[in-house]
Image (cartoon, rainbow, N blue to C red):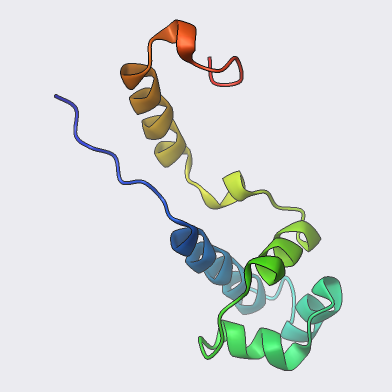
Length: 102
């Protein structure tokens, strides 16, 4: 029997988004102020999120994802997606899998 895959949660995606934001700032692609300008969130709020002192709301996370030109799947690894699709096709007969998954 194949091992169970670990399903991602909204919390996991939130953590990954914050890590992505930190990497952008750390590697000089964007400053905290630049990130704030792009997202229309305050620079102090961005700073506190990156420092782990504040959490993003769902609306703020959506705003950041959109302003960075990302989608939810950009926060998922190829291996995780492949494992999920493999598990899905094992659990669901091919005729019942939505066309976008086949």
